[in-house]
Length: 341
Ligand code: ASP
Image 1 (tube, helix red, strand yellow):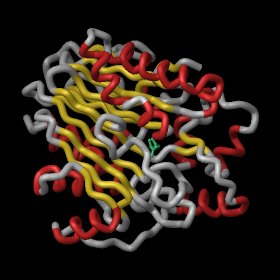
Image 2 (cartoon, helix red, strand yellow):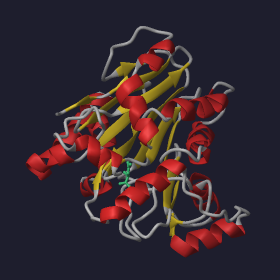
Image 3 (tube, protein in one colour):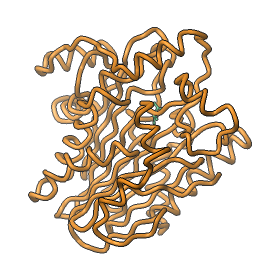
Image 4 (cartoon, protein in one colour):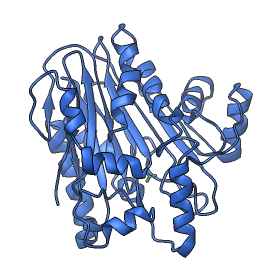
């Protein structure tokens, strides 16, 4: 996790520059006027995840398969902030949440799932093999095992172990999420980041395939050092992810409680339905959160990432530091999103 932050703070977009294949605006809205497939995902880990999705999209595959395969790359990485190696809850257990949604409003979700490597795939099985949308906790785990998913041993990544050890020194319960080193977060920020007090642990992905169909996925270990049983927005359809194949798709990252409060991803899709561009829709949703939270909004991060039916992508965050990865037939790029502060 610390490495990833350093990546964002230090090397930031120099490596992304090497990935340029088309001149684009430095920040904000990205217009993709080609009719071909496109995939976007949150944070710098999205670059690798998009490659996983692209293997499917570039061969004419379905967006649903692409968004599952894409975030599986991050879930399997074992060295960052998603999947079994990620930040544990405050009792030391990694609990995972994920969801997936296709172009027909089919959706599946798992939450508070332990010892399963690919929660997004279990979410897909919930969608395809049960009459339900959500399974949680031991029930989700039982279902996963019955579906043939192996029960893994929990093994924190070295970064997660270090962050947890640091956090344990004070064990102060201050759930604040997702402020980046590059953000506007006051003088004590670097030490807070190193102590693991500020963190983000999610990948959200939305894609459009060659047929113009949309799907999305979202997977997370949730807020680091959270209360046992705490859920954020990520596995909640309408909050962490929403897809309406007539309009567009959206996913979110950041402090999940504040995304849930405004049904964030659904709100963004509805704003796009009213004619707003993806970035403008994301901005409006962010403004709604800021209106609710007032000055306190400067202390948290929430970001939305959206894709519309025309293949235009855009994002917006409360604070600086959020970036998203985009891949299409003509570009591969990490885009720093615009923010309110
Ligand atoms: N949104 C996630 C949650 O609240 C965390 C994140 O985006 O890092 O669980």
